[in-house]
Length: 123
Image (cartoon, rainbow, N blue to C red; front, top):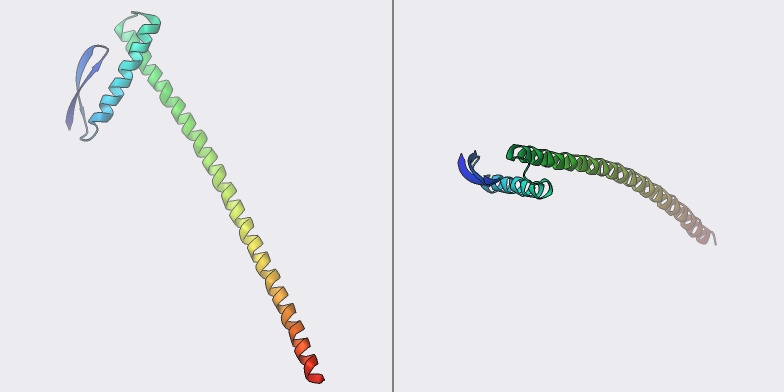
C-alpha cells in the first residue's frame, strides 16, 4: 500500500491507496477541492462540513449522470449491433440469391452451348 498526502479545503490528509493508484487518488482529491472552491464562491462561508457534503453530492450527481450516459451508449451500441446483424443477414441472403441466379444462368448457358454444339454436329 502506498501513502499519499492530499489537500482538501485547506486541510492535508494522509491516505493509503493501492500501489500505482496515487495519481488517481490525487486527481480525485483535486476534483473534490475544486468543487468545494466553486461552492464556496457561489454560497460563501456556509461551513466546512456543509461544503464538503454539497461537494460529495455534486460528485455523486456527476457519477450518476455518467452512468446514465453509459447506459444510453450501451443501448445505442446494442441497437447498432442488432442492425449490423440484420444487415449481414440480408447481405448473406442477397449473396446466396445472386449465387443461385449465376448458377441458373450458367446452367442455361451450358444448355444453349450444348444445343449449339449438337446442332453443328447434325449438319
